[in-house]
Every structure is written in structure tokens, then in C-alpha cells.
Image: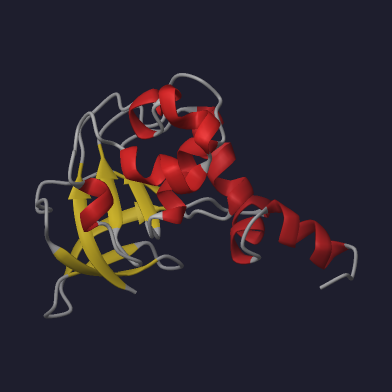
Amino acid sequence: MKGRVFLIGDNIDTDVIAPAGYLHLGIPALRDHVLEAVRPDFHTLARPGDIIVAGRNFGYGSSREQAPAVLKDVGISLILARSFARIFFRNSINIGLPLGIIKDMNGIKDGDIVNYDIKSGKLYDDSGNIIALFAGPSGPLSEILAEGGMVNFIKMKLGMK
């Protein structure tokens, strides 16, 4: 896949991702306010295939499921961070939003267009050079992601899909 990088810092909490004042309006309204505290233009720039590359502790705070849901809704196809809050990580798996742990972000700049392969855990530049490696979930969590989230995974296990 190919997408633009949104480089975001450390300690992005779920209230920054999905502001509480808009939760009652649902995902379509929340879309206009996603990450507005750190990137006011995010909702107008994000396109399908884009990725977020963040620092440490991405998604900490409340357990609101709307945070990964609204990121997926605006088109984010992959979130890479140095570390994630556990509940955000699990909520992302449950809705089928791929994520991974990235160790070296030195060569990645905001706005870069990168190619990425979620299965191999590699980011490439347009020349095909590897610019970063990341580790995605493995085992049963990768199976849930491969099915597009927990609901589809359960349907597959029950033979309903």
C-alpha cells in the first residue's frame, strides 16, 4: 500500500484523537474533529492508505472505542508508534485497524509518501529502499486483523463467512 505519513509526537491521548465533546454526535461528526488539538487540518488531509507515525504512549487515557474507529473512518490504514496504550492497541485490533511498533523513525518526515507492507513490517521510499522496520501483532491478533476485526473473525470461526 501507499500513503502519506502524518508524524505525531509522544503521549497522544484518546481525548486528543476523539474529543469528548463530540462523542455523542457519532463517528461522522467526530471525523471533523479527529486530532484537531495537534493537527487542525488532519481531517481535511487524511486519505485512504495514509499512516500515522507516532512516538511513545499513543492512545493512552480513556478506553473509548471511538478513537481508533474515527482514525479508520478518515482512511488511516496503519498506525506505527514507539509504544501504544494497551486498551487503544486492543480496540484497534478489534476493529481491524493495523498497527505496529516502530523502533527507528529518524528517516521519516511528516508528509512523506511511503509504500508499506504490513505483513513484512517494512516501509519503503519510492525507489524501493527500506526506510523503516516495524513489528505488527502476531499469532491470534494477526489473524483477527487479517479478517478485518473481531466481528469478522468470529463470523469466520463460526462458519458464517
